[in-house]
Amino acid sequence: MNQLFASDRDFTDEVIKQQNMVVAQHNDLITKAKYDLTTNEIKVMDYIISKIKPDDDEFHTVRSSLYEIANVLGLKRSGRTYNQLTDTLRNLRQKEVVIYNEETETATITGWLQEFDVTRTGKVEAKISLKLAPYLLALKSKGHYTQHVLSDTIQLDSKYSIRLYKLIREADKHRGKVMPNIRHTPEKLAELMSAPKSYNWSQLKQNVIDKAIDEINLKIIDMNLELHTKKRGRKVVEVDIYNTFYPRKQSTENPVPMTNWLNN
Image (cartoon, rainbow, N blue to C red):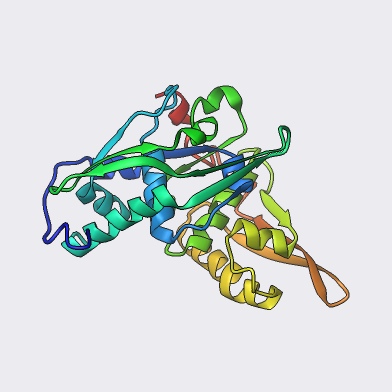
């Protein structure tokens, strides 16, 4: 499998249009799901989710190519890259995501992909795990979902930055009318960002949170994150992260420009 793709190949795909597609998912997949994916695994899964249409009532086979995925993710198009993307798809089928439903006291445990096919010429057909249907389909009728443009997560280089970005997007429930913020204990925030369990607060802040905030502030146009903490004695017991970009009194633009996703 490692040498399946020996050289670069060319395919005709609408890459630029795909980068402007929207990733929509139920909030529980952001705030309650436990999983540990690499940066590229998150990006590839976001890419696959962006193929879902708002009115889809079932998962359709996602048809693409390793060429298109590499282009969308900004990766060098080469045989090595295509082999790595194939391994990424395999990991998305094998790696667990656990989502706990407090109302039914049920834990859903599944992989991200049900299955996928890849041809020697690099064509890809993938099916999302059926267990993820409640978190990715018919979201308009359910409410409690979060949207973001695919290009936002593509440009972030760290899985921690992507996880924090999604948490901040989910926290913007008033569409920029009030300042979005997330508030958690250090332990809960570490879990949500899939940080190493061995990290103490100092390591979590230095190696995960600060770096994620710096990258988001540099690359995401409508985010300016600030970190605040509360202590009990010397121990940090609460972490608050605010997006001080909002509210913006003079702005007439939709702060999260994904509304058209519901109408197209």
